[in-house]
Length: 140
Image (tube, rainbow, N blue to C red; front, top):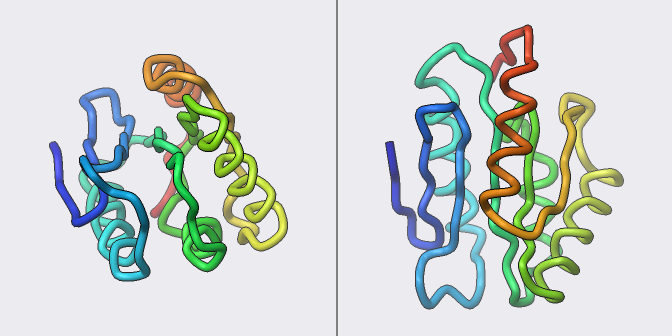
């Protein structure tokens, strides 16, 4: 299943990995885009009762701290594990900023492993391993 928002393409793979990637020519994120993305994630999280994991592409462009905070403080993103794909120096900086803000502002329900990885394939394999070992269903 796939849904295209104004900023991201979000896919639910058969193995219950939710993958989000930037659409072509996206150079900035907006509050409206975050809200639209979170709504799609809410919908994907209710598709079946099986645990889900996430893979998110980190941007290589500047992202406003308020936007990162919106992603780090939401309870919508409660996967078994979250792999952040950072394939450039700039995207690694954004990924590490995400982790820092999550530690500072994240809710107590966001207690799942997150790892910054270099490729989408690596991230999917890492998340799949966590999904396979999950024994309880996470409620969304």
